[in-house]
Length: 187
Image 1 (cartoon, helix red, strand yellow):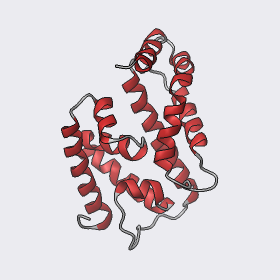
Image 2 (cartoon, rainbow, N blue to C red):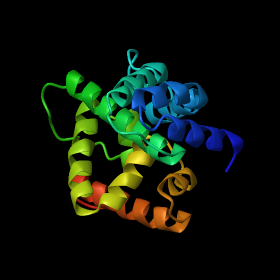
Image 3 (cartoon, one colour):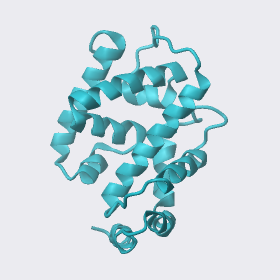
Image 4 (tube, rainbow, N blue to C red):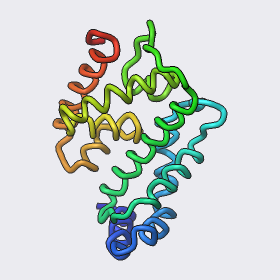
């Protein structure tokens, strides 16, 4: 574990009794990493002129500041940050799309929908992801970290504390499952 990762975990543990204090102490240590995650999640050029990586990180910060439980480790914090970013993106998509419809003829893998998709495509992905999480929570967590957290499979394995091969297997399954649900067949 690198010194920065140890510092993050130590800071979270030192402030375990007060999640807002833990968040404030850890944000300077992870801010650049969160912006990088947000940049990878939003993609080049951004989802819209109004949604920038900084705005997504700020929204994630606000959501994390409302949590009542501590994170304990860097891995738990990064997972919580990915969840917060996911929820912010979904709320953003809902605000932009009053009428939900099928993604139409556009056939994109889940990570491309999250980066380049329309609000309607993003909402379709979210509905399918919720179903996946009920059927296979581990695969859903991998999608959450890769698609919404912008993490690599190696980083995802580290966060989840499982082997890279396990993450690869869950990712392949989740992509095929989501493609089947979104488009009606495996893409």
